[in-house]
Image (cartoon, rainbow, N blue to C red; front, side):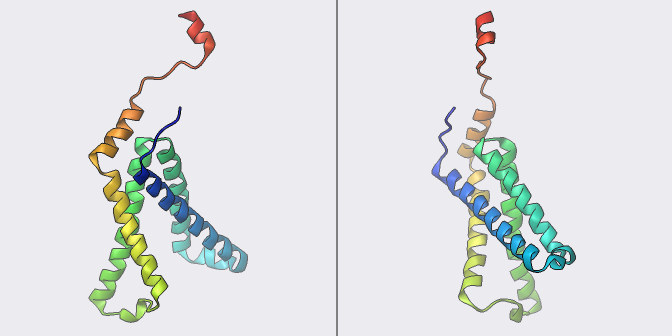
Length: 151
């Protein structure tokens, strides 16, 4: 059965696939150069956990499952809140030297924040919630010929 996905859902899928690729590349580089850094730094383990959960999100969203939508909202929300938390902490303590002053890190942070907020907003829309619920409540179709021959 072919499922027609809205364009916004494809953007959400692209967000999570890109996130998976970036985490994978970063972890592969750390494994190649500094295996001890992967073990010593706990945020790398959390990053690996987020990457594995993102794989589940992609599978759930591709199959239009409600649990995939909820997990996507949670992961994108945590990602956006972590960016906001970092900048609020920097603002509160006045530690602006912790913030990178080049262009690319700031663009990356704004993209992470903006796309995280977009994912949470888009997947929380009533029409998207109904689309996920509608596909999950469809009656099962008979695909086995032996079962249909018995009727």
